[in-house]
Amino acid sequence: MATLHLMVGLPGSGKTTLARSLEREHSALRLTVDEWHVELFGNDVHDDSSDADWAVHDARHTAIEARLWQTAARALELGVDVVLDFGFWTRQERDEFRGRAHELGAEVRIHFADASAEQLLERITARNARLPEGTTFHIPEASLREWMLVFEPSTADELAS
Image (tube, rainbow, N blue to C red; front, side):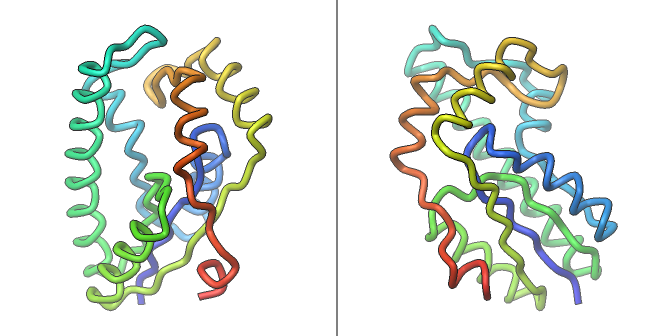
C-alpha cells in the first residue's frame, strides 16, 4: 500500500530537508511546490512586493499545488509513495488531504518540522541572503511573522494516526 507523506511546517522549519530524506528512504516521489514555483515563475516576491504581487504569487502557488496533487494522486494509485512538501499550515487542510489519500487506498503519515519563531526568522534571514538557485523564493520577514500567527502546529493525535 502506498503512503502519502505530508510535510508540515513554516518556511525555514526544515520541511524540504526532511522531505528529501524521506524521498530517499522510501523511494518516494517528492513534490515540493516552492521548487516548481521558482522553476516556472522565478522569484516573484520581495520585501517591497505589493498586495497585488502577493495575489498573483498566491494564485500561482495554488494552481501548482492543484497540479501536484493530481500527480500525487496518480502515483498513489500506482502504489508509489509520495512526499507532499506543501507546508499544510492548518489542521483542516491536513484532514482534507488525509481524506483524499484514504479514498485512494493510501496510508498517510504526517511529518512536523517544528522550529521556534527565533529559529525560523534566523533561517529565513540567512536563506534570503544567499537565496539558493531554483529551490525557493525570497520570504519577507513581515510575511513570515504574519504566517506564524495563522499556522496550526500538528497535534499529538495527528502525528500518531
